[in-house]
Length: 68
Image 1 (cartoon, rainbow, N blue to C red):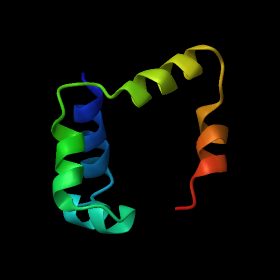
Image 2: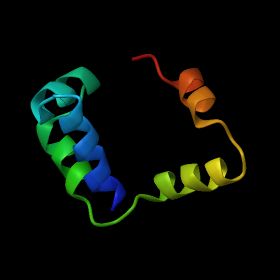
Image 3: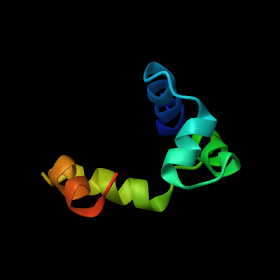
Image 4: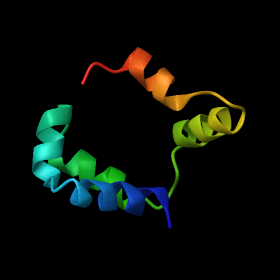
């Protein structure tokens, strides 16, 4: 499965609407829709996957940079 589809699947699994997620993230509903429907894997995501494959703990990385 594609990452974008997996993101949508996880949002639905968490019983969150696209609108509520967009509000919580401070982005527009359209921006979230674009993320979930994109056919192209963004370069940043490819880079993050590369770092993970080299042993970077992504939980630690995101804990350092996010404030949600």
